[in-house]
Length: 102
Ligand code: SF4
Ligand code: SF4
Image (spheres, rainbow, N blue to C red):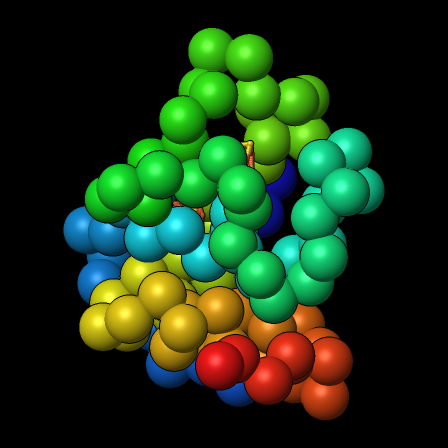
C-alpha cells in the first residue's frame, strides 16, 4: 500500500517526523462537509480553542474516518488558520472557491 505521507513528486518532501495530526484545524475548515452542512473555506462551528473539536466523542463518521496524510505536512506548518485553509484549498485546486474572509 502506498505511504499516504509520501507527497506527490511535484511537492517538496516535508519532515519525515510529522506523520500524525497536529490539530492544525485545516481539514475542519477548508473542505465543505456535507454531513455538517459546512461550506467550503469556513471553520466548522464545532472547532474550538486550539483547533480542537468540541464534539469529538460524537463527531460524524466523515470526521472519524478522516486520516492525516502528506497534505498535513503542507498545511500544518503554516502560521495561521487562514493560511492553512488557503493552502489546503490550493492543493485541491479549489483556490478559486476561497471565500473573501473579512
Ligand atoms: S489537516 Fe492534518 S494536521 Fe491539520 S487537523 Fe487535519 S489531519 Fe490534523
Ligand atoms: S465536527 Fe469536529 S472533527 Fe468534524 S469538522 Fe467539526 S471540528 Fe472538525
